[in-house]
Structure formats: C-alpha cells, structure tokens
Length: 333
Image (cartoon, rainbow, N blue to C red; front, side, top):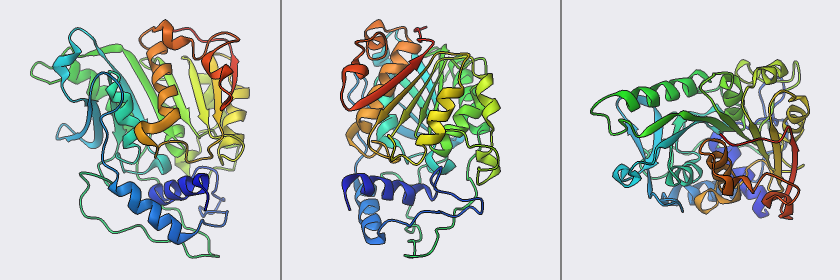
C-alpha cells in the first residue's frame, strides 16, 4: 500500500466514515483498504506522541470540566503571550466523530502560533486517551457500515460561546487573553460540513474547510451532512478550501462549492495527497502550515502571511505542489 493509500486508510479507520465514500444507505461504497495495513497504521499513529508545534508558543491539549464535550488546544504558558491576544478556531472532526484528539498534531500546530483551538468531543485516541478497543476491522468484499454522527454542528457554536465567556470571566486562565474579533471555524470531511453549517454566525471572521464540500440534493448519507448548497449563500467571511486533489473523495463537492460561492472572497488550494490530507504528518504537515498562514492573515492582519495567497506570484501559486484558484481576492482583517 502506498503512502497516500495508507493515510486514507488510517483516517477512514479512525473516524469510521469518510465524506463522499458513502451511499444513500450509509455504507462505504468503495472497496475498503487492506485491513492489516489499516491496523498497522492505526497502531503507529496511536503511539505517536503529541508535539508542541513549530510556533513561538509550545502547545498542549487538555480537557476542562467547564467544557466537558470538547478538547482544548492552547499555548502551554499563557504568560508568554504578553499583550498578544489569542485567536479562536472551533474545529469539527472527520466523520463528525467524538474524538477531539483525532487531528491533534494539526491543532497543536495551530495553537503554537497563538491560537485557542477547540475540537468537538473528548480524547479518544493517542496520548491521554483511556484504554479502548480497536475499531472493528472491515471485512474484505463487504461494505463498511457507518455509524451515525457522534457530534453535531452546534458543538462548534458552544466552543465559541465558551471561549468568549472565559475571556470575560475573572479568575479564568483565559481572562482577557482572547480577541473576540478573531474567531474562525474549521473542520475536516464531515467536520467541514459542520463548520459550513455554523459559518453564518456574525462573530466568525473566516472559515477553513479541509477535504469537504456540500453534497448535491439527495446525495448526503445522513441529516448531519445534508446542509444544502443554499448554506453557501449565507457566508459573510472569507473562506479557503484545502482539498487533496482529484483523488480526494471530497474533491468534486469542494470544487462545486467554490463555483457556487459568489458573495465572499474564496480560495481553493489543492495538494495532491488524497482525502487523508497531511493530518498525520509531523506538526500537521503542509496543510497545517497553510491554515496557520490563512489565520494569521485573515484574523491578525499579518501582511507577510498574505503573500501566500495574494497576487499572481503568491507563495502557493508558485509552489508546484499546490494548485490554487481564487475569486473576489480576500483581504486580511
């Protein structure tokens, strides 16, 4: 099994579902990858230690009694921020799963650059997870059943509400550490649809969608994914789609979304890695780096970061690994 197939295998395995591999009956329509390779990849990723990110603030993940159904990623030593404020990124997991650690390397990287990233769910994999049985292995030649979504889009709004409340609560570790104008939503696969569903919230200043896109009418496998293309007309903030190229099972949906968006600045950036993206790579890999640059530009107004996206000689435009399309060129906040 090649590297791309291995990535996709693990992520399908970890989140129990993948966005566009489903049929109307809620089963995987494609032939499942090799079970032995999936098992080996899952075990390897489970053993991968958390990293602190490459930003100036070493990051940690934690669960908190005041937000029991989420996992929080933040700079370990908040005092090092000085007068610098945190931006907030509410995150939807692949498969709409309840494993808030499933994208831990990606979210730790974002947090290390001065962000509070909050994922739906609890720590169900990797370091800090309780003992848990391996997910059932697919049976070759048989479709893989997909469980109902374990989280819902409203959980992203709950994360934003909590962060803003903590910013104003005396005694909170986050008291006056957050800029309430720096709010983003993001997510992978089914979690990307959750991010799109809540993106009309006027507090949200930008949206990042990884390997996702809205289904055509009648094609969504369950109600959580059935948000409709009309959702795109409610967007009010710049948006970037980070897709895995034509081999990404969400590619057609994501590219179709980009064509439908006509009211806000939009970018679609394709990296030919398939649906699994670079979430398993050290520090979230190339997709995390692009997400950080987008957040720094859109939320913090970092003009250096804007060079990745703006103009005919933009950084991503000149990088042969990426294919980029843009409309209504975005400007930073």
